[in-house]
Length: 97
Image (cartoon, rainbow, N blue to C red; front, side):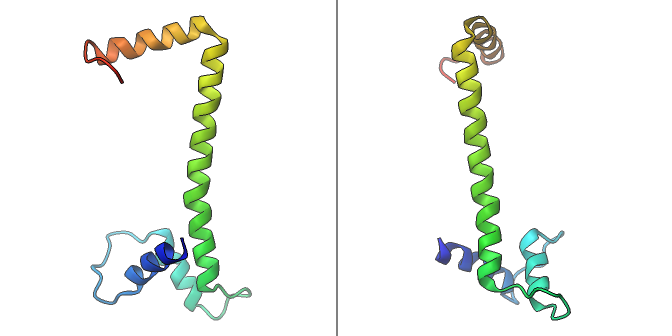
């Protein structure tokens, strides 16, 4: 994973990289890395850890939400039937979703 995050950082540090319309979080973190007036100095390892927290945090919460929803539907067959009917109405005769 370290190599993956380093590649993303290297892309952002490339002076030939096209200027983005808006800064992203990595742009801000790299600016903080250069700012020597901060009480706590960021390192590349700190930035990689922050990026990992953002990516991994999003996947864990999504998975937990889906698991919770499926558990709820299994315990409540009437609600599951209603949800299935809503999906069928939206999808129509297209088969599996």
